Image (spheres, rainbow, N blue to C red):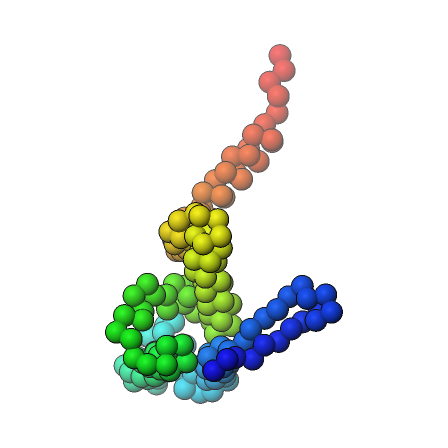
Length: 187
């Protein structure tokens, strides 16, 4: 598959974007999951069982059934992603095709704040960062590609510790407000 090439502003040739079939399959899967989670009753049960299992049980929603359903859906999506990777990129089975991307799904889910639209944007961000680290940093600039991994790790740490950073920033702002509100000591 050579992919679909879309050229925007073809006269000036500022931006060229290559969209492959795999990308459109991923976008379609994200759209299906969005409709399922936010516009269907089983999706509401999924969200309710995940956010407040006791409340879901009180409302008659089986949390264990929702958990099993979530595992089946995520397993199907993981199988689809693996099939797309093997059949669309390598064209044959490769035993170590996911050597560097074992936890990318968790990273993308955290960066996307567990929302389908956020996951799409986070996946594009992470993919661009990984590809940029290999092509832009290592090959063109001679900078080790591990710097891209470092940027990903710092992003994850900041997002995972959002509450911690909010508290620190609140203390800094409160301290600065306290300093500015102090009246000068005139004797």
